[in-house]
Amino acid sequence: EWAAQLCERERDLQRRESVVLQQQRGAHRLRGVEQEQQRRVQSLQQQYQQEKSELEAALKQKTKENKRMKASFDSMKELNDSMKKQLNELSEQNRKLECQSRKVQARLENLQRKYESFTTHRSRETAAPKAFDPKPSKPEKPQSSKAAGKVMSHTVLTSTLRRLGEEVSRGSRVSPLFKSSCLLTRFLCSLIIIKTISQVDVLAQAVEVLSCAVRTDEGQALFLEYQALPVVLALLRSASPALLAPSLDVLLQMSSESRTLSAFLDQCSSEDFFRCASLFLRNPRLEPPLLEKMLMLLQKLSSVRSNKRLFEASALRLLLQEMHRTSGRSQAFISINLSSILLNLGTLTRS
Image (cartoon, rainbow, N blue to C red; front, side):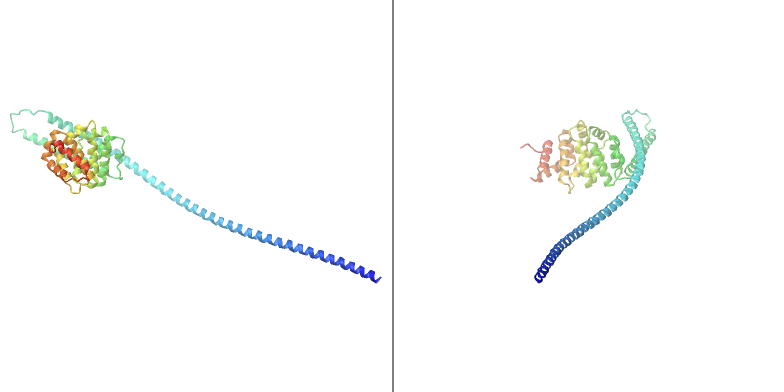
């Protein structure tokens, strides 16, 4: 009986031991699951913090972009308002300039009619033969009256030209008449400004318009018709550095091969032109490109036989000979033109 009890106790202890072992194994499994869950929770927390940081950074970036876009929008709105204001001001200014342009155009047409009438009247007076008058003492008064009338007419025309020049050059930097689609309007406006205005920047604009005009056959015909050569020569005499090159460009364009070349060379074949050319070449600060342009023009004039006397009278021949003697090898183009001119004048023999 005691042995049976011991066996029973031993079996009970074994059962308890197995239960305890099972409980220990269950506790170990629970501890492993708990650790795994803790690792997962920590990983999720880290992932959450990382995503949170990324989202916060993205939110800050978006906030900055929104602020920048709002600032850009505000500045664009201000710029738009400013441009609207400028557009309204420019529209008002354009309206005033158009009104001024119409007035100047009307004055210009009136001046043109007066000039044509004056030219026709003068040509009739010069063409009409003088009748013989047996009483020479009485016509003195009518002749004096005619002379006074001519002087008054010339004074009125000069005053009108000056007023027109002031009207045309007033206002914006570029006169609206310079942008006219009518070549005659642009041409006459440039001549009026060159004859009446002394501001170099305004004169430079007028000469540029004149240079563009003579690039066409119609512009070259207008240059000859309105005798614009003395106007350009006056610019050359002024010796203003900003006006010399464009003025010479006008003359060179007129001397290009065209139907008007012969008539232009005839107008240049005068003492006034040759005196101006002599004065121009004696300028001590004359740049080589300007010298080349003037020599090209003189080369064409030297081919006209009757101009030999003008080269002599203006002392141009002696000046050109001295320039040819002192010209260096680096100035080949200038030397060639000088040789051609002197050869045409008969002072240089062919080698």
